Length: 136
Image (tube, rainbow, N blue to C red; front, side, top):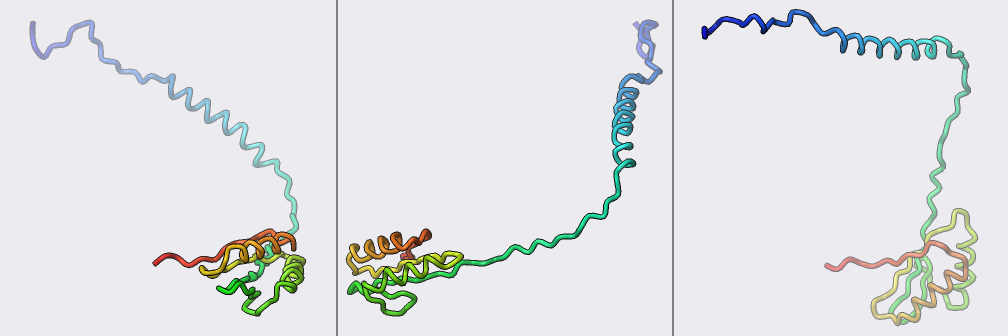
């Protein structure tokens, strides 16, 4: 057995396999045949210009505070129990409807806060939240 010699059966492949190249070319040809008529035969239309400025009407926030003695303050103005329903109904009738933020003193009875929530619900306010301070 001689080293460095090549057997007669091992012929070097000296031709490029054309099948994958032809497949790629046919796919590209089909893509161009489909896309070129779409690009050429489009109708030129002068479309109207429209501006879209969304109205950022943020609803105002109504603050209802309940102090330690159970008194109500609507936007820092003292309000009696009999006036609270009327004022909350007036706020609920506004468009867009304001958000109600309830701030209750930590020493107030929960009953007073629950009465304020019930009055807000009966008035028709849909967005009610509680304001608390984070623990330090």
